[in-house]
Length: 337
Image (cartoon, rainbow, N blue to C red; front, top):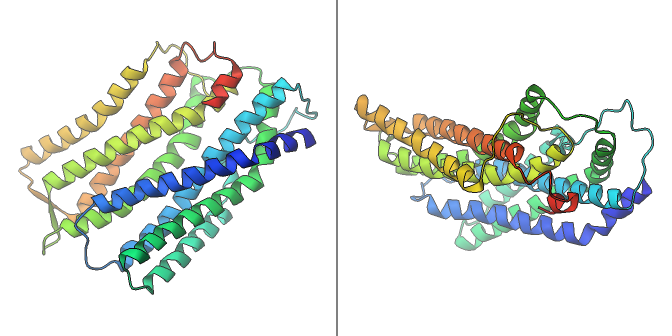
């Protein structure tokens, strides 16, 4: 155990920088979405509370999971190279998914941070400077909460991952693979993506709605397509990296899948959002629908986002299981990705 702890401490400077960069990157992406979703509506109060309540836990959990997976992967590689032995590996439930280390109490603390930030902003003058301070505060909260989760979970997860690697005997069957992917990849990532984009659908559609609360179908189709492509590509890349550790540990394995190239996977990622919005456009044309209530528009866009999230996760898993080169790569190369 002490050897594992030493390996984790040796990574501290690198993982702290990684967590900071990820925190800045995720918040900056959301800030760009904020500035792109014009027009701004007059009543900011509900939106800002919704934004802070969702952004802080969503970004913090995303960054923490990314950081924990990276640390555990590196520890597994280094421990194997040093031939570290761990006793009592039998008859023990090994918790190897980073999502399992994020409890509801930790999420409640993250939400509380979001509430505090929203309260401070609600009392400000809401100038452009205050807006920048708000996003800086969200970055700091994201970094602090993610780092808190990592500090508490890096040792038990790294030990569990290495134990699981040492005692792995056979790979999971298709049923267990699908169950694992739904529980630890699709549901959490789709939830984060949908919750984050929900804030912008609310802001965007309320800003576009006419006096009667209706939004033209063209705006619904356009925003749904852009958000769908964004989510599908994001989760394809995110899950593709995270699931590699599960693949090494035998948690993910699908039989009978032919080779899937990167270009084929990307084409599928692009095709599904286009197919969904074309279906929506055809549906609107068939029933001669020219506008939706903004509540309906929000629901439809969230549903399309969920379908695109499912696409991104599924393509990532299929490409991972179909890769001909993954088994040939040295363990260190796979973990470094």
